Length: 262
Image 1 (spheres, rainbow, N blue to C red):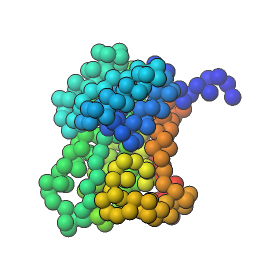
Image 2 (spheres, helix red, strand yellow):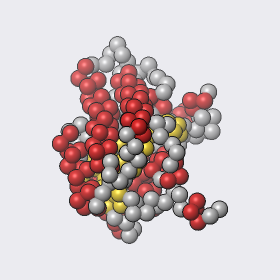
Image 3 (tube, rainbow, N blue to C red):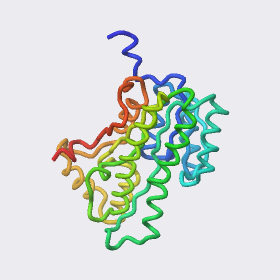
């Protein structure tokens, strides 16, 4: 393999903005992008967690800056993109990772909770995609939107979450077509994780019962035999963020251990 092909998954010198970076998938994505050469603007509403992730990356010789950021606020998106340009000199990678899950069926869901889930999971991704495009038009780049297998299949008790993640799936395709036909040099793709062992999943199992027993039951749902880890999703994001995927746009990368193949 040539040196050129060996370096395709490197993102040396690229500036990446990762939302929801304080823990779980966002932290893993940030660490993998750092390991492959990116400079990082990390955002979250969890200031302590986000600052800790940035500090670990900087201690490891990286370049990371944390910014408190509510993804539902358009003015904060404008400020975040401007900060990436002012501090690092540009923006080349955007990972719209911030999200939340609230369990309720279509019958039992409240309008208040529906709007909360939509505001973070869908409005936040829309705003990020909109201002990410505007911030990358001169340089080109890659936008990676974190959806879910719940945007492809459905669960009876996740009405709002299912709808929001399905919205992310098709918003991504629309934005990809817009960028491609506008010749912006911006690719837009979605990632659809299955059950991934994160603090969110662990906390849910703790609330509903025994964590170890719950994990064993979820493991058995996957043909591959176990749940995924955040690093599994992070390497999928790296692929879509790098030149290794230069001919990939409007696509959906499912990372679920075979769950949706059944």
